[in-house]
Image 1: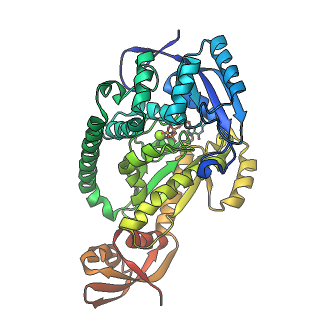
Image 2 (image 1 turned 180 degrees about the vertical axis):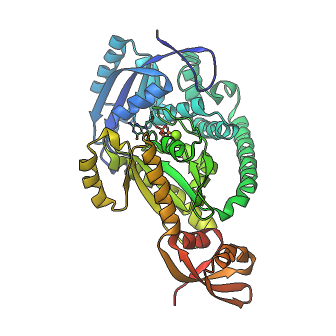
Length: 445
Ligand SMILES: Nc1nc2c(ncn2[C@@H]2O[C@H](COP(=O)(O)OP(=O)(O)OP(=O)(O)O)[C@@H](O)[C@H]2O)c(=O)[nH]1
Ligand SMILES: [Mg+2]
């Protein structure tokens, strides 16, 4: 059997590659409140490969709804069993999420490990987590996922210890009961909170500086662009979820032309909810950004689908911003960047997408000029489009006006009790920043 050295985690053990069959059930879009839709077997195969399995077979089925006990219908299930035998598969991976009972039934019938989409993504995250923060975040996501599935985990581990899907806290939590798991979850939450508050103290002094944050589908080329713009030396690899930790670097050409750029974890279609929850601290970078730089892989089979998936995750994050930190809902300014343009017919592609996204950039991150184009566009957005607006600001936040005073951009200022009313010359981004971060309110005359 093929072996592979686990370079990312630095472990020197040779991990045998599993042999996987990928299975997808196409369901009507509306099934289970929008959780249906078409399966994406090429992407699932990429996920399986990143997790450490060679894909030896594929099965796809279209159904009006899943079979309740086994997800697949009985005919397809027989076909799958035969394929498992013929290919000597050790693992079956479903693109759909399985209930604990479905997983158990399938494993019993097929006599191999069965994982669903969430489990395989959690496994990749476990494998790639290297910082203390990302390890805690992954463990929290895994425990939240395992809690309702403890019984299944037991039978699963009895069959084969150490395979895909059993990495991480699985082994160490084997003897524990639900209560113990609950306690561990509370400890993890506490530790993550501590890390987050330390990070906040460290970044408080950066508040004056403009923040741009790279977001996008996994493998779109965010880290490549980050390196092109900042020489940060971030890990780049042709695999899914290469980056799990947010990295921030300062870009400074001169005193006015400067900003902070942050590289973040990639998104994916149907990102497991446990991960979004656990990675809140990492995704905080997205909430704090003045400008989102949405990187899209132009060579992807369906770039629009990827854009929609990223927007969906961003929207999931947004309500939390609105309820707590931001009294006024707002859309974050976004710069669309179509990357890997060297892999497609550039003219044809730009023609098609510039109609939908008139301000988008079309670049190649592996070409140094690509990074520079994105850098200059960020600076344009930072400095361009000034307007005059009046805001009401709590007196405790007066410091937020100091940069406007320095650049003679405060046109009028009046005090009224606990509030200051100021008329400012500012960019859209600066306005959003006052509204979202400083508790300012826009006064519409
Ligand atoms: N041909 C080509 N390849 C690119 C380009 N940009 C990035 N790549 C390649 O695409 C792969 C993924 O790049 P990354 O920068 O790691 O992508 P990412 O968005 O950071 O991915 P995650 O961290 O996994 O979410 C790497 O193999 C890069 O070398 C580009 O403009 N052209
Ligand atoms: Mg990356």
